[in-house]
Image (tube, rainbow, N blue to C red):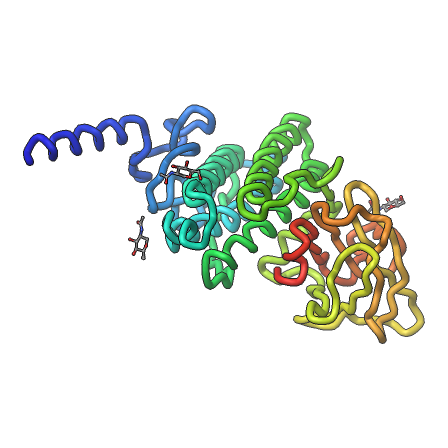
Length: 334
Ligand SMILES: *[C@@H]1O[C@H](CO)[C@@H](O)[C@H](O)[C@H]1NC(C)=O
Ligand SMILES: *[C@@H]1O[C@H](CO)[C@@H](O)[C@H](O)[C@H]1NC(C)=O
Ligand SMILES: *[C@@H]1O[C@H](CO)[C@@H](O)[C@H](O)[C@H]1NC(C)=O
């Protein structure tokens, strides 16, 4: 009995030393460089890993001008708090049986934990990038509305593709090429997270076509989470499938945009690097998703505008709507 306990204690010690059970509180930014710590690859605890155990915003600790890219990193950190929290809530709510009992691969929970760790590593990078003369945003209370492992898995796809849609847009706002490169390197990882789910969970092709959809106004996607941007856009999911070539009826669930009767309006649909403009009638709110776009690949983003091609963010009279196409069965569910 004693020797068995000793063996358990020794193996626990080995796990702590290899970082598997390392407690988050023991870490600092200097001791957790992403790519040089197992905390962001194989930490398996339920407790939030550093720096995601930080509560609240960190106020500036130095006086002076903000760094030239601070707003960019602040946007990224605020978005990452949301993405991280989604995974952390999944890690806390479920265990491996939650997924194996539904027939999903026995690695599902482990992968979710690993993605959670990756997201904490992204937070570390963003915290480190914001200068000490600027505030480092903290977490909000997030209610994702999942009720079971299956609804969590459906939202997982939406959250990953949303980050894939705003990261290229944020890269466009970078001043230094090195910042754009860091954002690209992080987007590559989000894309792997999405590919994992498409293979292991949804049993569809992991590839979204040659180019993922880049949305030029990433702040509008970020604002969706707080509903602080232009009026949110949705479509009648009972009546429409939301795929290329199909008719949709849009709705504005929060507030109606102010349409002027003398003006023309449009729906601009984005897919890959292209956009297609279709006239929009504010009375019927109906539109047809361009049949030109590849079916069942990645996402299509729709936005209502007062100019063809959505040339400026001010031309958007609604928030963007992400129409998830892959897997196709989720378009009407998320
Ligand atoms: C998973 O959680 C359930 C319910 O909370 C519990 O009964 C089960 O023993 C747990 N399984 C594992 C492998 O921890
Ligand atoms: C997990 O599943 C694989 C293949 O489905 C199987 O070979 C393996 O034994 C399983 N592992 C555990 C720990 O159940
Ligand atoms: C939409 O496409 C048109 C035509 O290719 C292009 O001129 C315009 O810049 C695009 N809009 C955005 C916001 O990229």
